[in-house]
Image (cartoon, rainbow, N blue to C red; front, side, top):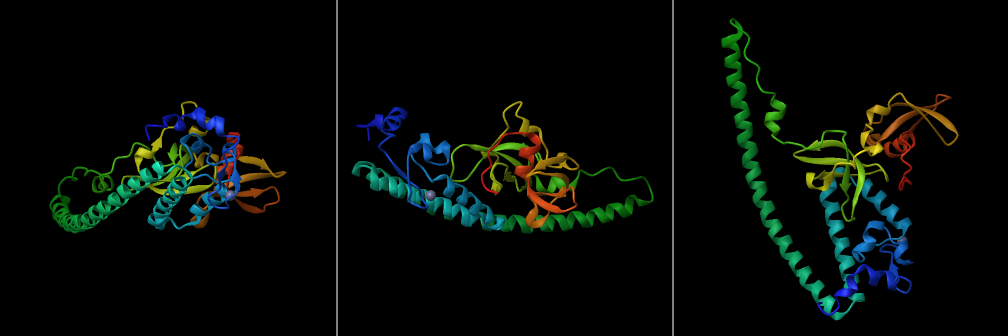
Length: 295
Ligand SMILES: [Zn+2]
């Protein structure tokens, strides 16, 4: 590996760009570096390249997987990485192939140790829940007694809000805050909205391609760049506004629910209602000039 460090320098990549072609992971189309997506991965030396069409398709595909199947998605991302590594190993020298083998072994080691910790965690967390439940029962019972005692005299002092004290999670970002967020399997960060928070992590909606990701740790979030227009817009802030698209004028009536939770319900001048994605509507109203992928 020490023999050819210049291979990984950006200048090498630039020089060879004309003759070096990459394969789309999905359709195997031959791609020049500047046709590879995501753009951010181009300088990192060839992880996860797809043609633009397959790139957008893949992100839409991820979006359609049930939120609860986060694990499955993680495995898929992992498998994809493996596939890329194998590809890289096949197309480069024997030396680098050996290196990949080493790292693959390391990954599997990690995986086994992860399994061990997970099973440990489940047992301890079970215990924790049971003892929590017992504690909650106890508190309720003692509260009842206390209430009886104080009912006829003075009002009992305000208790700390149970919603914060029982969850005990602290968040740096508020619900509906705009943030830049990493996307599993891709380099870089993307404009997104926090649409819920649970157990110390975040569920985020990616504005530019109408996808979402769940259980995102805080370490994957960053504040929007200072002064970024999109960073100040809030989802509810657009309710009641109007915008023009496809030759029609739309009122933004309400936020969608369920399947449509990342859509605005919009009504055109003839009273016809239509759901439009949160990302596309914000892009129009905020004039961000994003070229949106996905729907
Ligand atoms: Zn493709």
